[in-house]
Amino acid sequence: MAEERRTDENVIYVGRKPPMSYVLAVVTQFNSGSEEVIIKARGRAISTAVDAAEIVRNRFVTDAKVKEIKISTESLTNEEGRTSNVSSIEICLTKKKGK
Amino acid sequence: MAEERRTDENVIYVGRKPPMSYVLAVVTQFNSGSEEVIIKARGRAISTAVDAAEIVRNRFVTDAKVKEIKISTESLTNEEGRTSNVSSIEICLTKKKGK
Image (cartoon, rainbow over the protein chains, first blue to last red):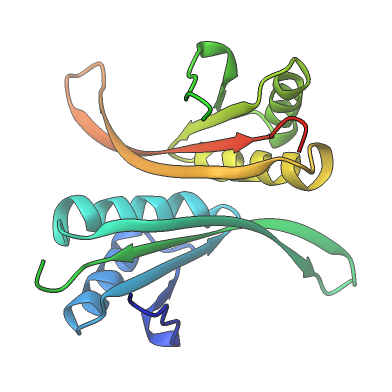
């Protein structure tokens, strides 16, 4: 079946902007021919990532499905050398062509 | 195989408290004999839910696995009768006994 393709192009990193900014990025990515778009976020942006995925699925790319959701923990080191753990999420949306 | 049991007991609703409050609730639930605990959250609390799940898995119940993560959209009606959509998440953690 479809090989997992993780080029940088089909990964959308969610930050502090409103969800619609990322919705636009995801929709653009699907429209440019990607079958799979991965939405990644850390910390407080996780909620925004879920919002963006849901808006894409419900309003813009209604044939897109959530293929997989992964959560994990990343260790970040700040300028003072202290490490803190931050949760992250990866939401993989797929749109099958011709089905 | 294991029937999906969704009694109220093994569902932890995440709100505005710090993640550790919910971590404690999840750990208590596992210690009381549950094999499966579901963490639910809406809106901004989604990040906290992911934090809680990750802390449980990494620090307290290291044999717990993420069985499934679902995202969805809920319509809420406020006092003025307006509806707004809010994203929600369900994280299902399982701990297999005797394995």
